[in-house]
Picture 1 (cartoon, helix red, strand yellow):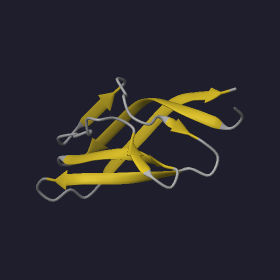
Picture 2 (spheres, helix red, strand yellow; picture 1 turned 30 degrees about the vertical axis):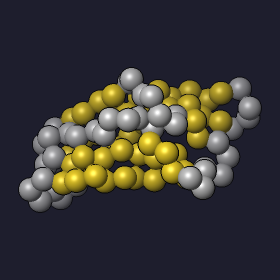
Picture 3 (tube, one colour; picture 1 turned 90 degrees about the vertical axis):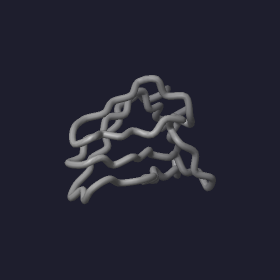
Length: 85
């Protein structure tokens, strides 16, 4: 399928603990993984993704923030993957 992307790795960083996950939203948001990322004033990474990892044309990426600890001033979440042909 043209223009379809599969997420294979998530990476997050924050200056405090920010528990979060990205969701693929095709009209019905679904987490990319069943375990939230929680960088505790540092980095968190995950390659064992067992949720909806396929981004298709017209899909959105939502950020689901489950909780924060202390007073974070920034958080970053990135993903890598492959284009499916």
